[in-house]
Amino acid sequence: MIVIADSGPLRYLIVIEHIHLLPMLYGRILFPPGVASELTQAATPEPVRIWLNHLPEWAAIQSPQSSASAFPSALGLGEREAIALAEEVGADVLLVDDEAARIEAGRRLIPVQGTLGVLDLAAEHGLLSDLPDAIERLKKTNFRGSGNLLDFFLERDAARKRRLAAPGS
Image 1: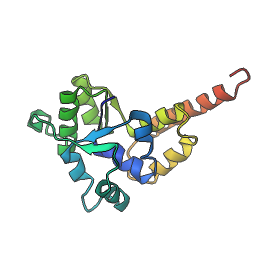
Image 2: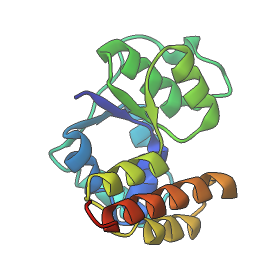
Image 3: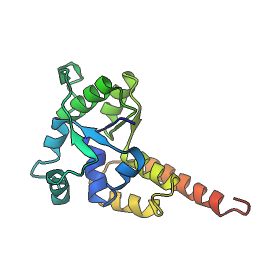
């Protein structure tokens, strides 16, 4: 599986201490230099900068071969490079939260998964036992997700737990 990551999902999964889910779900993760640059900015939380300075073996920085200049100017450099790289390598999924980047990836037929989707998938596979706690931790960051979106994932998790607890499951 080829997975490209933008800075958002990496950043939030590191901050809420669930970055370990990525290799469990996807194996190897690639991200472009523009994303690495975003993860080293002064305003970036220290655990994120430390993670990047001690990159695990399952994560690697890879430059796209094509120019990222052909993308909408509303996208940041990391998003443009991540989409370009995903397109070049035929990624199975692009991990990205930004709505404009998700729209552009969709326009290019690149499947996307956001931070909440990663957490939900981990819960579905039994790799995350407490999705509500993970979402509460996300809410304490600058993560931007609507109340309706957060409620959707919480309700989905509750329904999953009810199914598993039902007799005959």
